[in-house]
Amino acid sequence: MEYLDYLSPSVDVEAVAAEHQARQRWVNQDKKGFLRYRRPCMDLSKYRARHIDCSGDTIVIGEALEVDRQQQLEIEGYLRAFMPWRKGPFSVFGTHIDAEWRSERKWRRLLPELPPLEGKTIADIGCSNGYYMFRMLPHSPALVLGFEPSVQHYYCFQALRTMAGAASLHIDLLGVEHIGLFPECFDVIFLMGIIYHRPSPIDVLRNIHAALKPGGTLLLESQAIPGDEPYALFPEKTYAKVPGTYFVPTGSCLINWMQRAGLSHTKLFCSHPMSSAEQRRTEWMTFESYNDFIDANDPNRTVEGYPAPQRVFLLGRK
Image 1: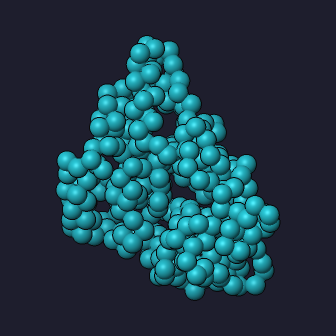
Image 2 (image 1 turned 45 degrees about the horizontal axis):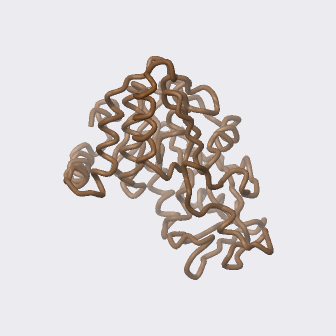
């Protein structure tokens, strides 16, 4: 929990430490569901990459020439233990990982509005395997803390971070519901692909507002429905086959949510329809993906008959 040493004294250290310790006791149990990811994490953590490059679309951790052929095959096997890979692409000691999401496209859309990150304290809520955190490294942040309750993503990131020697990147098994333990702590908060999974989105945004330092920035990316009116869809059971989706707003509805939560200088700076060119099955993610979620006879509708999703990008400040 060395990341606490770098955070503002306003953080509720005792509460964060208690939550961290409780989750570590949970994840360190010798159960198959944990060992499935802990073991390959430990095996990969024996490797240290000499060449790291996070400046391009693919996160490069080590080159093929740094290991022999047998080691490369072992590394690939350990990496496959973390399937399905949702975010990427990565290249690890010569093994290319084509993830479900073309995450580099989302990063490019963020870049024009990215605030200065040099020397800043940053939170990435729902960080998954840390793809966007690695993309922040060339901007020289002081600290990036990933909030990620998924054991699979937690151990995958830990393995990648150790191999890369990325000392300024950290992760904890925390969710967005824990952001309230970090008052006035972060210069920048990334909340991407999360808000529509929460039953009380305005409460989430209020807690994020409280966790930002004065003048801090929220970068929010979300699934959305088309339209200019401030509406939100509340699906009956699932949206695009996902049961954990609550409110799917329009972009203008999200702006209103952000403003009602106390954020200012809000703006929607990018909106685009989703497609199977950006989210799809690959060798590293073999389950259902975008094409399976959309009506085969009407690409403007989900399989449930709801409007097909767009993705929207918004910015707000404290």
